[in-house]
Length: 459
Ligand SMILES: Cc1ncc(COP(=O)(O)O)c(C=O)c1O
Image 1 (cartoon, helix red, strand yellow):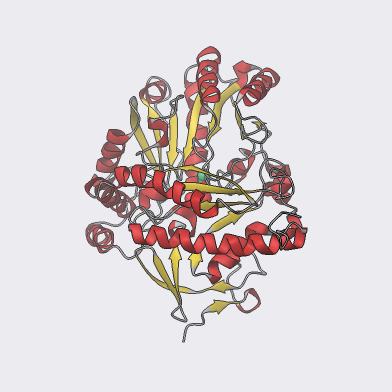
Image 2 (cartoon, protein in one colour; image 1 turned 120 degrees about the horizontal axis):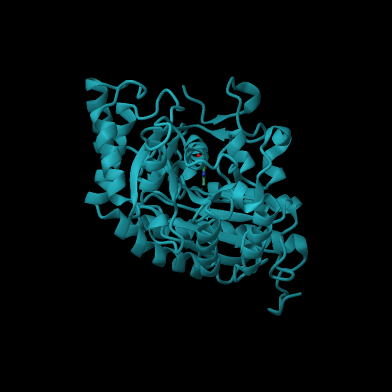
């Protein structure tokens, strides 16, 4: 008999948060998952972390994995290669922005990001500029849980006790409506960081082109992208994109970097490449970066055991086939516009909702203090946690965060359904989410004393 909820005191698993009872999910089909008690939840978060982009229980992906496992599940890529790895690299290059010609596979998003940093540094070293190592990146970001990826953020709240281990990279604030709607202040901060580092020591600028959980749906304004491209030209650093979430269709393009005004030099991607059926990531580089290595030491040898394994690459190939054959890039691009409008309309009358933003199926909702319509909500109100708990009661899986203590963003919710969700399922997700937000908003307004008076005016 499987229990439907696990309490951390009674489990041998060390969970992420010990105080949170964990529902035990036993099966999934499409955008629905079911717990051990038979309760069904609509999954508006693609498996909880934006990875299950094609939904649960896909027989074609399972068949591709099984077929490869039967022939050859694993060989290590240090001395051997395999057809699945070779073919997947060809297919990724075909859908990447122009100029990208080589791919190295990884296991996760964090190690893809770390490899992007290593490749950027290798590029400079191979070309005779060993003094370039520093990385500048937006402070309000999430790039993974490893030491280097934590260091790529400027968020002591996320570093926790690991600050002493982290490289001292330089950070700039995000150009959001609250701090810098035009992107001018972020460019000034970038100039100041370049100056502080000494531009000839800077290896890369590293960012998410469109943010996921750290600032759901946010992308810097056009002025910032143009200014970044111009500074890259002037100072010779590389631009690396964390497309762990945005790669393979999430924003209605194969890569978000295909459409930003500043095209990247290196792209790291992961989640949607395995679609929740395999642990696989990839780092894609421009030909110039490959040439620097090819014309230099001819070695870039670090990697993990499972990098480029036949089993995970076979799943990646099947995922790309599904995304292409089912027209999911176009579907996400077009339906995403309506989904954002539907969310905005459903939340229009909620005073704690400031903005619904995003691209494709990577959407975000930002919450503010209703007393002035712009400040962060008080942390102790736990709005993010309450949204997720209430959504759960409504039978909906969402992901909300509260990075308030880092000072760049307040309570916010990410909305990132699978690309295969039907219109009816998307409508139902919006309806359940709207009910959850309205319920929490009513409680919060009552706690803050801003509930509408019986005569209809606001007190
Ligand atoms: C934008 C972004 N980058 C990197 C990562 C890390 O990926 P992984 O958990 O596969 O290491 C995540 C994970 O959520 C992410 O959202």
